[in-house]
Structures are given as C-alpha cells and as structure tokens.
Image (tube, rainbow, N blue to C red; front, side):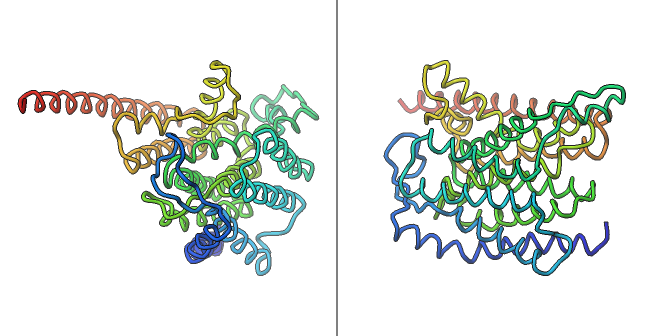
Length: 365
C-alpha cells in the first residue's frame, strides 16, 4: 500500500464526516416539518421530549457524496455491477426507512422489502460461498453449495440489517458501534489490499462519526430506521465483499467478531420472544442496553461500556487477521479473561456501593 492509498481513504472518511456534520441540522428541521418525530409514549423510550428522526438521511447523503466524489475523480473506485447492486439495495432500504420513520409499517412488510433489497446485490454477483473456501483450509476437501450461497448471503444481509436496528436503543449507540466496526474493517482491508472496499468502509465510518455529535446523549436527532437499517445493510455488504475470504474459520470469525454485539443482542432477543410466544419482531425492553440501564447506569455510561466492548471484539478480529488464527487465539483468550475480570470487579464495586448506600440510609433514620 502506498501513501496515496492512505490519503484517499482518509479523504473518504473526512468528506463523509464533514458533509454529515453540516447537513444534519437541516435534516433535523426537515424532520420536524414533515412530522418524522419520535414521541415518547412507552417505557422503551429513553427520552422525555419529542426528538426528530430521519437522521439516517444525513448519514446516507454523506456516504453517497463521499463515494460519488471518488467514482467521479479516481480509478480506485469503479462502478462495478456489484457496487451498483449494493447501492441499489441500500437505496431501497433508505426509502423504506424514511416511510417507516414517518408512518410506521408492519414488521412483515418491512421484512419482505428487506429481503428484496438484499437479493439485488446477491444477484449482481455478491455471494458468500463459504464451503468453497474449505479448499484453502483443507486442500483435499471441496464442498460446493451452489444456490445455497444465495440463501446464506441474503440471510446474512437481512440479519445484520435488523441487528443494527435492534441495538439502536440509546443515544449514539448504533452510530458509535457501526463507526468502530467500520474503522476496524478499514484497517483489515488495508492489510489485505482491498482498496475499493476500504474506501466504502472509510466513507461509512466517516458518516457515523460526523453524526455522533448530534446523536450522543442528550440527542438532538435520532437516525431512526432510515439510518440504523442503512448502516446494518452496508455493514453486511462491505463485510461480504471485503472480509469473507481466506480460510473458512478466519473469514467467518473476523466479520462475526466485528459485528458480535448486535448479532448476540438480536439472537438473544429473537429466542426470548419466541419462548414467550411473541413475534420475533415484537418490541420489548429487554435488550442488553436496557438491562444495563436497569442496573442503575446512565445512558452515557452504558453507551461507553458497549463502545469499549465492541472495540475489544474488533481488536480481536484485527489480531486474527494480522497474526493468524493460531497465534491470535491466545491474544483473544487473554483479552476476554481481562474483560471478564473487569466485569466481575465492576459488579463487586456496584454491590459495595449499594451496601454503603443502604448503610448510610440506615444511619440517617
């Protein structure tokens, strides 16, 4: 990789970040004018006053402006059939999100349209041919999966699209997690010399970072389904084009670690709802961020904790890419042990603080 590549990727980041930062106030005014406003009506809402939605429209605009600049002025990013498919699918997701942010749609309708949007890049050639990669991991084994790759790829795209949307429950949470994940993708793609996907990931991360000043607690605007589903869709597509490859275990572990928090939260939510006899798409107040709030933490504390957790997982993914699965496993194990110790210490400190608080209350009586 030459210095030119690093400058190009930094440029993609800063163009997107700057555009989103300056256009978001206008998007906020527009959202209030058309009635795209989140009014707190139930216990799931963590805010007490009406807040504009549609912030994702600014995120999308910043991303498009950034990659549009490089499509027009650089040979490092070409309008290939796969990229056309990704952008076409993302546009459908954005339109769906805008409609849903103004007039909420039924979950079934959204799900069907998401499948259609995911199918577009798939039929433009973007696939996860997982079992084909086993020939690299074990040269004498080759298991073609044929048309099953279509189903698996659509499942991955729709799954990540909804996973990011599900975790968008606190100010700045989805934007920050997506920003951390995409910056990590940029690092990995630079290592693997995938300049085209690194530019897309850099533009996406810049758009997230440019939006956070308006979305961090106390939020002035929400990204809404418009932004959360767009980020999820793009994270899924960029991970397929830029990360799935190499050995099977490594190729799956890297994108999974980068997106582990929304994947885990969504998987647990679906299982929880099915066991309760509810629709998997039904809303509730049992996501990981809600549970941490119920422990007595503030919104900012919860968001920062989940940022750190995501960062640790991303460091593990980067370590696997640079060091290989064998050497990196020790690093991953040590990191997770340290995280577990930190959680235990934090839990014990909380118990001590609660005990001290009860003791102080007893003394004042």
